[in-house]
Length: 397
Image (cartoon, rainbow, N blue to C red; front, side, top):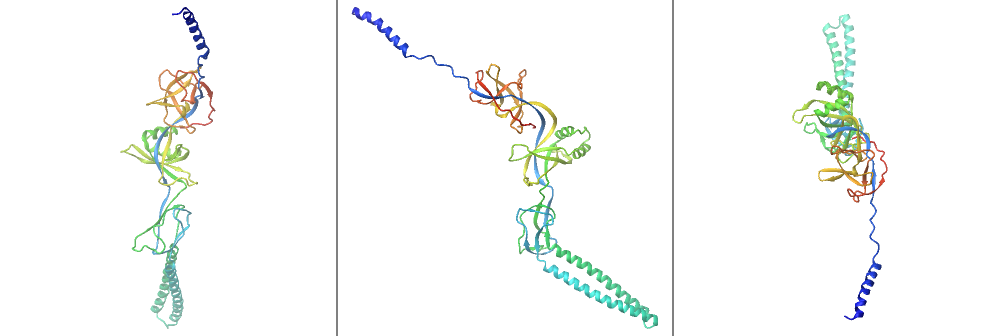
């Protein structure tokens, strides 16, 4: 190799290294910790409850039937509408009944006229008897005729009352207030054609409405104790429960929250030996008419006294197979996992009761639980916590 080339090679190497150094930037910086929203566990007064399945039923159900035989002339109600007590529902053809009333009145006039003549005949014979112009037998017969006409007048007057009652029954009215169903017969049909008592329509009362549900013996005794009823024989306990008129809440099948309230007013006198439950009834205000007989409902019955528990937003609870856990931010802003036991009942404001699953672990009101940004938080890595707005809800299970 030429001496000059040997001298140039080191210089070229140094130049290349220098150029490479000029093109490289500073080492990459560490990204900032992700921002997450945190909330503090809250202490709530919680009431333990049990849930039961129930069904709404009308407090009163009446089958509308005709008391007299006749053709339907007019129907005054629409299918499914609300009717008031004594509201006119169906008119039967009243002409035959009016004719019978008129006929009975005419018969009464005949008897009254005959009675007047009989009274005059009786008075005449009494005077003749005094003068020897009439026998005692004739007087007695005349007196009997007067009494006979009196009896026939009384009977005819009663017949007129009955005929008028039939005329009144030709106008069928609602015996109770409530929602009426579809008429079973339409205009022109003959009611009681074959002597059978045909159903015309059914009315079910709306307000109040009853809610029936079965309760197991254990829950019923716990509920009674919660009402301040001493442990005693079942008969006396059931009687005391009815007197107390305890409260309960319920939700319709399509609802999540138990926002409706009712009052216990009946407990059956027998426990079903096949199920171990007893039938309970509650009364529910239904002035708005939103509850329909036959609808299913979930009933929540308080079975314990109020006690304090820690609650967190339901959105903060994470699942890992069959385990539940929270992501808690420590004082050093490092995320830790806390396994918890979760109460299955969700409170009205979206909070849920939790307790640490492992012995020795704790959850305090000062802890910061991640409620938003859970996807960006990683266990044992730092985060930037931001306080969430506090809930003003009040929780009762």
